[in-house]
Image (cartoon, rainbow over all chains, first blue to last red; front, side, top):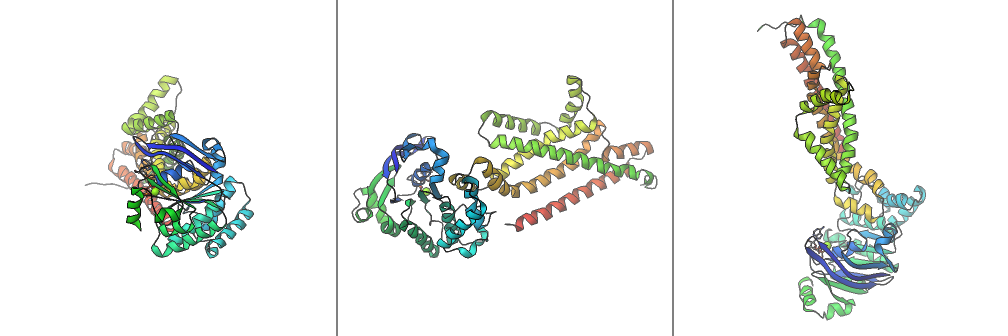
Length: 237
Length: 219
Ligand SMILES: Nc1ncnc2c1ncn2[C@@H]1O[C@H](COP(=O)(O)OP(=O)(O)OP(=O)(O)O)[C@@H](O)[C@H]1O
Ligand SMILES: [Mg+2]
């Protein structure tokens, strides 16, 4: 469903992605790991055009992404490290905003849908609260519900638990695990190795702008092929 | 010291009427300046290079030259060029609107830039179109940064408006001077004018504080 070929991206003189090639099939859960600065976020952001790549191609269902910009955004949901909830809107308004603005869903239906999503992430009682009243874990669960409200076919997560206190990591990972069960296609940048091992179908290990390993987690975590992956795993495990 | 306020008394209503003139002047200038400043700020954050360049150059010129010079140019030079005679009040309003637009565009631009860029990214990732992103997500948050600075601009404008007296608009300042000249006593009417300006500024300052506290509460 996503076909990435020779993807390159530079910021000024420094090349951050040095030719990434990979395929992601429908329903697959991909964990992207690697050292800081290796280009994981940039890769993810290229997938939904938050960054425009300099060379190579990204095709979704066979179509080059630049050509379907607005439709593409509706297909891809994104969850950020720092939640990026809209602080001046309530939880319910955060979730219903885009469906109303973009999909032209009427308010009543959007709210009904939002309340179902809130129930799914265990936050029914917070519908009318403002984000500032929520804990980090709750904010991230709302952010996930907000992205899901657009009925995406693919969900991108950029270190969704990195900004959280340790005791809140679990609740967010649980919501993500539930999402995995629904068969959602997911690309997750994460430092949670246990989680990656448990839920991912494939692990992409990035280093210095390159895709160094692309492997099933069982194999990757037990027998990393490259030295760079070995060094990295020694540090984080 | 020989101060004689008794002589001033009959002229007090005349000077007080200047408050209305000054406020009208400032309010019209501010509204026009705000509208034009908003447009300029959109130029500045927009993608069209030539508009951005224009807005930056515009701001630079209006901030880099004396206000009184701008006013004299508009008052004397515009009629000379176009043959159209504009009154002192209009020339003053025009100058102040054009001038404050430069400052206000900076205020708005800074206010928008101060909004966390994650907000824009979240909206883009959700597919929200530029217009509703600006109107419903970015600007409401930017307002918190913009309103207090705008209030300061209002205060500055109120004080600086006194220079329209130079071209003869009948504001507080000009009226005080006229009364002074006709009584051959300048100190008392100028003191009164000073008191009026001070009270106006204090009122605006207090209003601004109340507003800021309201905004802070909604956080
Ligand atoms: N907008 C930008 N402008 C310039 N350089 C950037 C920009 N975004 C990222 N970079 C640089 O690109 C490189 C890769 O960044 P990226 O955020 O993709 O890494 P990452 O793997 O996500 O790292 P982390 O684990 O710290 O999040 C870094 O060296 C970073 O400084
Ligand atoms: Mg990152």
